[in-house]
Length: 496
Image 1: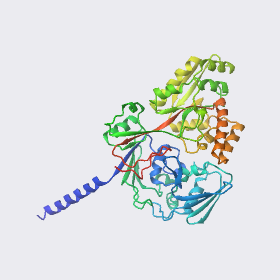
Image 2: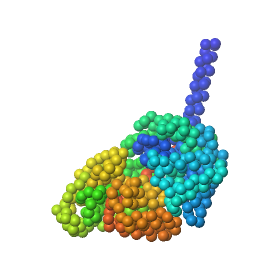
Image 3: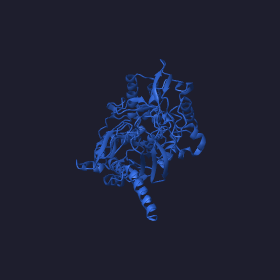
Image 4: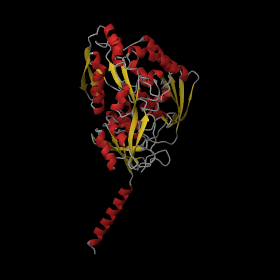
């Protein structure tokens, strides 16, 4: 008996532990890319934004309709001249390291986000002065009215990190994130998974619902889909287009298929031949059958487009309707540009099978006009470097989209914009886009964007192809999912 008793105790303890483990609720989410830096000030990937939503709260957030709503800021006021924003912060909130969230912490984050090495500095460049009024009140003065400012605070520029953790870890904070969010960073296996544990002191009562969130890295959308079907993952941030036709009521999963805020297409390098002439760019633009691409490649899960504004944004207008394919007019434009016999160019595109298929369809659509396209595949990081350096002829890079239209157009086409890889510039366009930035009346902003689109449709520095739909695969076992138009998965309310 004396020898058996310890074994019985051990066995009981093991059974208790197993029971506790079985009761723990883990939400498994597949991501098609491995998040790089876990610091919002250094982020450049949508996969990172997916993870950030669990670790960091933002000053403001979006609801299901895309409306800006309170988060860490309970309310706010804006001065009559639209240059001073006063934020009234939530009290009693703590960072995951136990340090207090307050106005000084917000000031620290906003100042840090404006530093030279921060990728958020352009978002916040109009901040002139920050004043800590008291522990729960912050006043932000801008140098000029800036209509997108509140929208910007719903994304990475509005995510608040622990100042104590940033000081502690220094440059290695990118691997040791600490926010006020519903889940705490536990660790990662590069290229495989990233694990977050429940924040027991989260300020929102009753949240989070789950005990743990595990992000599993699955670059192949079909592998992710098979894991969804088998129950190894609960949510996939991508879904195979071809499987949209195979959905059935008996499936153990459902699909979120909603319009996104983003766009797909490709840049022309307007600083180099052959795309230094607008007639050549126009010719390519009107040779592409966007509806055919949407049907063949995406199984209808995109909207053919001709602007940076999807139908869920107020700036969306008639200009987003794609032009009809017109071979005769394209040939006339090429003749006017001295390219009557055609020409050849290289198109650099992403490595996914869908993007390659789009490239191949573009090849076929341009061939009747004597335009020969060579396709080159490159990873996103390499594409961005090529775009910044201007070492390309045509470059296929899309954008996941943001709530305010300014964030979909300004940096892409304004002279010397940070995302203006086309090297295009127009003083008239710059003026219109600046007017839209400083105007708060939506109707007047819409008018400025309509006029801007008239210029872009003639100059075509970028060929807009379509607006993606957000496609998430979700297990029927998952409860509490909320679709937000920014296309980023919120985990606080998830359960199963």
